[in-house]
Length: 408
Ligand SMILES: Cc1cc2nc3c(=O)[nH]c(=O)nc-3n(C[C@H](O)[C@H](O)[C@H](O)COP(=O)(O)OP(=O)(O)OC[C@H]3O[C@@H](n4cnc5c(N)ncnc54)[C@H](O)[C@@H]3O)c2cc1C
Image (cartoon, rainbow, N blue to C red; front, top):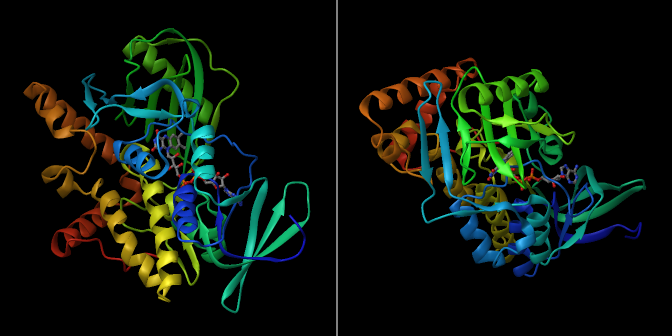
């Protein structure tokens, strides 16, 4: 990279799945596209790696078959098992068969390379400034000086803590609650949890998000909670619970535990952030997150839409902001439907059949499950999302789409 200011059509910040999908669309449309990634590639990503059927279809259709090195062992997942404090458990298979268990270090790198875009890794986005019809983007190569680029458009595909979003809306991070999700890896002594499934606990005493599954011969035990709580204490509490209630016997956690901040919430209440002017925000940065924290499928789809919107705006000389908002409304519908109680009760917004699994239970267990779910939902009461979810659900019923008035 020279120190001269280089001019490109689009800079994408972050080399993840949203970025790969956006880059593929832009590169295919003939736009000069540069991806900048702060980490060295292939980079690690904190993730369970359970791809939804829809995400799987997207990868196959856009990038081809997933290479074997981009998978963890077990290489596929059959579905999810929900566990409840009343000790009722229900397993649900994904529609259409098993899905891949992605090794994010390699799957993301594979998709990024297949996009055809140029990539600069170990290069951090520092900031940007509007100058005429382009952004001057400041980056820094690891251990080096600042490097500047001129770019007609910028896409923030840089995940939940999105520095691009912060550059556009510095106050936004203070407006939403933040969570921490962390996972530890254990060698297994004995684990009765079926390794073909991703296991999730609807248990308010364990935390806001509690999961476990097998990976590469070890058992992951993960916990999510409001930022500020103690990861190690929370994690140990879950390990003890799994041992007492499910007979899961694990060795002490290995040293390679990990965690990160999560912007869980915006997709529940239709409070997405899509950017302004010639800067688009996409993927989890804009708030896309499906039920039980599945974020890869909506990252891929929203990233592709961001890329298509810029291609369309360039070719047909259209105003980017309204165009992106119009196009992204389909993905908003898909994602927010997953949290919409009317859709959950009367539609099929998820990729596994929860109503069928519920109805397969004896009546007394059905009642226990519904009671336990209600108690779990009450854990989120402090965020005051209930009324907002109902307002957005009614708007969806009336207009067939979620209103964009609160998007930024
Ligand atoms: C513990 C955990 C488990 C999960 N499990 C699943 C699962 O099983 N299935 C699923 O579908 N989803 C899961 N998710 C969610 C999923 O990982 C994310 O929703 C998805 O990766 C979002 O993709 P993205 O492309 O929007 O951004 P990200 O994957 O977050 O990528 C953002 C990229 O931007 C880069 N970046 C950040 N700042 C800068 C900067 N200043 N300059 C340059 N680059 C920068 C980052 O290094 C990163 O590469 C999980 C998340 C967590 C935390």
